[in-house]
Length: 260
Image (cartoon, one colour):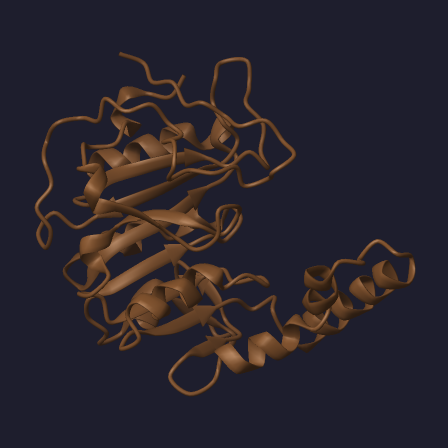
Protein backbone atom coordinates (compact mmCIF):
# COMPACT_ATOMS: atom_id res chain seq x y z
CA UNK A 1 0.00 0.00 0.00
CA UNK A 2 1.01 3.58 -0.58
CA UNK A 3 1.02 6.10 2.29
CA UNK A 4 -2.12 8.20 2.68
CA UNK A 5 -0.23 11.41 1.87
CA UNK A 6 0.01 10.24 -1.75
CA UNK A 7 -3.76 9.96 -2.08
CA UNK A 8 -4.99 12.65 -4.50
CA UNK A 9 -7.18 15.55 -3.48
CA UNK A 10 -10.69 15.39 -4.82
CA UNK A 11 -11.40 16.83 -8.26
CA UNK A 12 -14.79 16.79 -9.94
CA UNK A 13 -14.67 14.16 -12.64
CA UNK A 14 -15.96 16.80 -15.05
CA UNK A 15 -12.65 18.64 -14.54
CA UNK A 16 -10.49 15.61 -15.31
CA UNK A 17 -9.58 14.73 -18.88
CA UNK A 18 -7.10 12.38 -20.48
CA UNK A 19 -4.64 13.94 -22.91
CA UNK A 20 -2.72 11.67 -25.26
CA UNK A 21 -3.31 8.01 -26.13
CA UNK A 22 -5.21 5.39 -24.14
CA UNK A 23 -1.90 3.68 -23.40
CA UNK A 24 1.60 4.66 -22.34
CA UNK A 25 2.16 8.36 -23.01
CA UNK A 26 -1.32 9.52 -22.04
CA UNK A 27 -1.92 11.45 -18.80
CA UNK A 28 -4.92 12.66 -16.81
CA UNK A 29 -4.95 16.41 -16.17
CA UNK A 30 -7.34 19.12 -15.02
CA UNK A 31 -8.91 20.51 -18.18
CA UNK A 32 -9.07 24.00 -16.68
CA UNK A 33 -5.33 24.36 -17.33
CA UNK A 34 -5.64 23.76 -21.08
CA UNK A 35 -6.70 27.22 -22.24
CA UNK A 36 -4.59 28.96 -19.57
CA UNK A 37 -1.27 27.27 -20.40
CA UNK A 38 1.17 28.82 -22.83
CA UNK A 39 3.95 26.25 -22.99
CA UNK A 40 4.64 22.61 -22.19
CA UNK A 41 8.17 22.04 -20.94
CA UNK A 42 8.85 18.37 -21.48
CA UNK A 43 11.80 16.77 -19.70
CA UNK A 44 12.35 13.35 -21.23
CA UNK A 45 11.09 12.81 -24.78
CA UNK A 46 12.25 9.49 -26.23
CA UNK A 47 10.11 8.83 -29.33
CA UNK A 48 6.74 9.79 -27.84
CA UNK A 49 5.17 13.24 -28.08
CA UNK A 50 1.54 12.12 -28.36
CA UNK A 51 0.57 14.00 -25.17
CA UNK A 52 2.08 17.21 -26.50
CA UNK A 53 0.49 16.75 -29.90
CA UNK A 54 -2.97 16.12 -28.44
CA UNK A 55 -2.63 19.10 -26.10
CA UNK A 56 -1.72 21.44 -28.96
CA UNK A 57 -4.76 20.19 -30.87
CA UNK A 58 -6.85 21.51 -27.96
CA UNK A 59 -4.86 24.74 -27.53
CA UNK A 60 -3.05 25.63 -30.75
CA UNK A 61 -1.71 28.86 -29.29
CA UNK A 62 0.53 26.93 -26.90
CA UNK A 63 3.93 25.45 -27.79
CA UNK A 64 6.39 22.77 -26.69
CA UNK A 65 9.93 23.06 -25.36
CA UNK A 66 11.36 19.54 -25.03
CA UNK A 67 14.63 18.47 -23.41
CA UNK A 68 16.25 15.09 -24.00
CA UNK A 69 19.96 14.62 -24.67
CA UNK A 70 19.49 10.97 -25.71
CA UNK A 71 17.30 11.73 -28.74
CA UNK A 72 19.89 12.62 -31.36
CA UNK A 73 20.87 11.39 -34.84
CA UNK A 74 22.32 8.17 -33.42
CA UNK A 75 19.05 7.51 -31.61
CA UNK A 76 17.01 7.79 -34.80
CA UNK A 77 19.48 5.81 -36.89
CA UNK A 78 19.54 2.95 -34.39
CA UNK A 79 15.75 3.03 -34.12
CA UNK A 80 15.36 2.85 -37.89
CA UNK A 81 17.80 -0.09 -38.14
CA UNK A 82 15.93 -2.08 -35.47
CA UNK A 83 12.54 -1.31 -36.99
CA UNK A 84 13.67 -2.18 -40.51
CA UNK A 85 15.09 -5.51 -39.36
CA UNK A 86 11.80 -6.21 -37.56
CA UNK A 87 10.01 -5.43 -40.83
CA UNK A 88 12.21 -7.86 -42.78
CA UNK A 89 11.53 -10.52 -40.15
CA UNK A 90 7.78 -9.88 -40.59
CA UNK A 91 7.45 -8.59 -37.02
CA UNK A 92 6.13 -5.26 -38.28
CA UNK A 93 3.40 -5.95 -40.81
CA UNK A 94 0.39 -3.77 -40.00
CA UNK A 95 0.07 -0.36 -41.71
CA UNK A 96 0.55 1.40 -38.38
CA UNK A 97 3.70 -0.58 -37.58
CA UNK A 98 5.15 0.10 -41.02
CA UNK A 99 4.45 3.84 -40.74
CA UNK A 100 6.10 3.83 -37.32
CA UNK A 101 9.39 2.80 -38.97
CA UNK A 102 9.54 6.32 -40.42
CA UNK A 103 8.64 8.16 -37.21
CA UNK A 104 11.65 10.43 -37.69
CA UNK A 105 9.61 12.24 -40.36
CA UNK A 106 6.85 12.85 -37.80
CA UNK A 107 9.48 14.12 -35.37
CA UNK A 108 10.81 16.62 -37.91
CA UNK A 109 7.30 17.83 -38.71
CA UNK A 110 6.34 18.33 -35.06
CA UNK A 111 9.54 19.95 -33.83
CA UNK A 112 9.71 22.83 -36.21
CA UNK A 113 8.51 26.40 -35.99
CA UNK A 114 7.31 27.17 -32.48
CA UNK A 115 8.01 23.69 -31.07
CA UNK A 116 11.63 23.03 -30.08
CA UNK A 117 13.62 19.98 -29.05
CA UNK A 118 16.78 20.87 -27.13
CA UNK A 119 19.34 18.05 -27.08
CA UNK A 120 20.23 18.82 -23.49
CA UNK A 121 20.12 16.94 -20.21
CA UNK A 122 18.09 18.32 -17.33
CA UNK A 123 20.31 18.47 -14.24
CA UNK A 124 20.04 19.84 -10.72
CA UNK A 125 23.14 22.02 -10.89
CA UNK A 126 24.61 23.04 -14.21
CA UNK A 127 28.30 22.44 -14.77
CA UNK A 128 30.54 23.41 -17.68
CA UNK A 129 29.08 20.90 -20.15
CA UNK A 130 27.13 22.67 -22.89
CA UNK A 131 24.55 19.89 -23.28
CA UNK A 132 23.12 20.38 -19.78
CA UNK A 133 20.58 22.78 -18.30
CA UNK A 134 18.53 23.15 -15.13
CA UNK A 135 14.76 23.27 -14.72
CA UNK A 136 15.02 26.94 -13.80
CA UNK A 137 16.99 27.70 -16.96
CA UNK A 138 14.56 25.71 -19.09
CA UNK A 139 11.62 27.62 -17.60
CA UNK A 140 13.38 30.95 -17.94
CA UNK A 141 10.91 33.80 -18.43
CA UNK A 142 8.07 31.50 -19.51
CA UNK A 143 4.76 31.80 -17.69
CA UNK A 144 1.72 29.52 -17.32
CA UNK A 145 3.66 26.31 -17.77
CA UNK A 146 2.80 22.65 -17.84
CA UNK A 147 5.93 20.90 -16.61
CA UNK A 148 6.14 17.25 -17.69
CA UNK A 149 8.95 15.12 -16.26
CA UNK A 150 9.84 11.55 -17.22
CA UNK A 151 13.61 11.20 -16.88
CA UNK A 152 14.00 7.61 -15.67
CA UNK A 153 15.03 8.17 -12.06
CA UNK A 154 16.81 11.51 -12.42
CA UNK A 155 13.62 13.25 -11.27
CA UNK A 156 14.80 12.93 -7.66
CA UNK A 157 17.78 15.16 -8.43
CA UNK A 158 15.64 18.11 -9.54
CA UNK A 159 12.67 18.15 -7.15
CA UNK A 160 13.98 21.13 -5.19
CA UNK A 161 14.01 23.21 -8.40
CA UNK A 162 10.29 22.76 -8.98
CA UNK A 163 8.87 24.85 -6.12
CA UNK A 164 11.42 27.58 -6.83
CA UNK A 165 9.39 28.20 -10.00
CA UNK A 166 5.96 27.71 -8.44
CA UNK A 167 4.49 31.02 -9.65
CA UNK A 168 5.15 30.03 -13.27
CA UNK A 169 3.77 26.48 -13.10
CA UNK A 170 0.12 25.65 -13.76
CA UNK A 171 0.48 21.87 -13.66
CA UNK A 172 3.15 19.27 -13.01
CA UNK A 173 3.07 15.80 -14.57
CA UNK A 174 5.79 13.58 -13.16
CA UNK A 175 6.79 9.92 -13.22
CA UNK A 176 8.51 8.53 -10.14
CA UNK A 177 10.68 5.46 -10.72
CA UNK A 178 11.99 2.73 -8.40
CA UNK A 179 9.36 3.57 -5.82
CA UNK A 180 10.36 0.71 -3.54
CA UNK A 181 13.64 2.43 -2.71
CA UNK A 182 12.54 6.06 -3.30
CA UNK A 183 9.19 6.09 -1.49
CA UNK A 184 10.44 8.34 1.31
CA UNK A 185 11.74 10.88 -1.21
CA UNK A 186 8.33 10.99 -2.89
CA UNK A 187 6.58 11.37 0.47
CA UNK A 188 8.87 14.25 1.41
CA UNK A 189 8.26 15.99 -1.89
CA UNK A 190 4.48 15.67 -1.68
CA UNK A 191 4.50 16.79 1.96
CA UNK A 192 6.57 19.90 1.27
CA UNK A 193 5.50 21.05 -2.19
CA UNK A 194 2.84 23.72 -2.51
CA UNK A 195 1.44 21.92 -5.55
CA UNK A 196 -1.50 19.60 -4.86
CA UNK A 197 -1.78 16.06 -6.17
CA UNK A 198 -4.99 15.52 -8.16
CA UNK A 199 -4.29 12.19 -9.86
CA UNK A 200 -2.18 9.08 -9.51
CA UNK A 201 -1.65 6.04 -11.70
CA UNK A 202 0.59 2.99 -11.49
CA UNK A 203 2.54 2.35 -14.70
CA UNK A 204 2.16 -1.37 -15.34
CA UNK A 205 5.48 -1.57 -17.18
CA UNK A 206 6.76 -1.77 -13.60
CA UNK A 207 5.88 -4.38 -11.02
CA UNK A 208 4.00 -4.36 -7.73
CA UNK A 209 5.99 -5.56 -4.71
CA UNK A 210 4.75 -7.69 -1.81
CA UNK A 211 3.85 -4.54 0.17
CA UNK A 212 1.60 -3.27 -2.63
CA UNK A 213 4.00 -0.53 -3.75
CA UNK A 214 4.17 -0.03 -7.54
CA UNK A 215 7.61 0.28 -9.10
CA UNK A 216 6.57 3.32 -11.19
CA UNK A 217 3.83 5.85 -10.51
CA UNK A 218 2.58 8.81 -12.52
CA UNK A 219 1.24 11.84 -10.68
CA UNK A 220 -0.48 15.06 -11.72
CA UNK A 221 -0.16 18.07 -9.42
CA UNK A 222 -1.94 21.40 -9.84
CA UNK A 223 -1.06 24.85 -8.57
CA UNK A 224 -3.75 25.79 -6.01
CA UNK A 225 -2.75 29.45 -6.26
CA UNK A 226 -4.04 29.45 -9.81
CA UNK A 227 -6.83 26.87 -9.76
CA UNK A 228 -9.30 26.22 -6.96
CA UNK A 229 -8.95 22.77 -5.44
CA UNK A 230 -10.54 21.25 -2.35
CA UNK A 231 -8.67 20.03 0.73
CA UNK A 232 -10.78 16.88 0.75
CA UNK A 233 -9.01 13.66 -0.21
CA UNK A 234 -10.40 11.65 -3.09
CA UNK A 235 -12.59 8.63 -2.39
CA UNK A 236 -12.15 7.23 -5.88
CA UNK A 237 -10.61 3.93 -6.80
CA UNK A 238 -7.44 4.09 -8.88
CA UNK A 239 -7.23 3.46 -11.79
CA UNK A 240 -10.30 5.52 -12.70
CA UNK A 241 -12.55 3.77 -15.19
CA UNK A 242 -12.80 5.67 -18.46
CA UNK A 243 -9.80 7.89 -17.70
CA UNK A 244 -6.97 5.51 -16.85
CA UNK A 245 -5.75 2.84 -19.23
CA UNK A 246 -2.96 0.31 -19.01
CA UNK A 247 0.43 1.60 -20.14
CA UNK A 248 1.21 -1.90 -21.37
CA UNK A 249 -1.86 -3.49 -22.93
CA UNK A 250 -0.83 -7.10 -22.42
CA UNK A 251 0.12 -6.70 -18.76
CA UNK A 252 -2.27 -6.76 -15.80
CA UNK A 253 -3.51 -3.44 -14.50
CA UNK A 254 -2.36 -2.27 -11.06
CA UNK A 255 -4.91 -1.15 -8.49
CA UNK A 256 -3.53 1.39 -6.04
CA UNK A 257 -4.31 0.99 -2.36
CA UNK A 258 -3.60 3.57 0.34
CA UNK A 259 -3.01 3.25 4.05
CA UNK A 260 -5.74 4.85 6.14
